[in-house]
Length: 130
Image 1 (cartoon, rainbow, N blue to C red):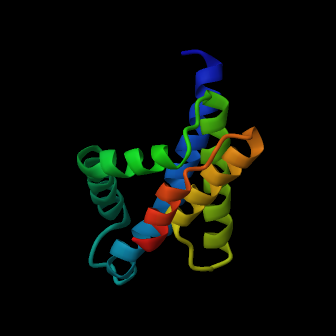
Image 2: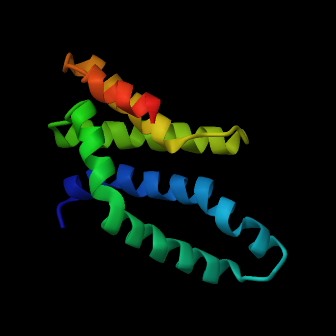
């Protein structure tokens, strides 16, 4: 496998790790801490259902975010995923409430501003009012 591909995929893997650190605790934190469920079991169950959820229900969200602003370069995808992962990790470490959806929307809008691409304000309004 080409090292360039691994480099670009690394931000997605980092994003997945930061999402797991932020959201899995909401589902399994109490059960793991009270030793009702082993950490390994909780991690495997959470991972399985995250994959199932993204495969079964991720198309609608992807379409909405694509309407907001298309990122047409692999480097752009890397930058957006890295920005989201860094902000979610930083806020999780600071024990601040964080919404990954808001971080993704902010990163896409930031990329649009950086590249001079238009942001679809109709899609943004629909997202904000949902």
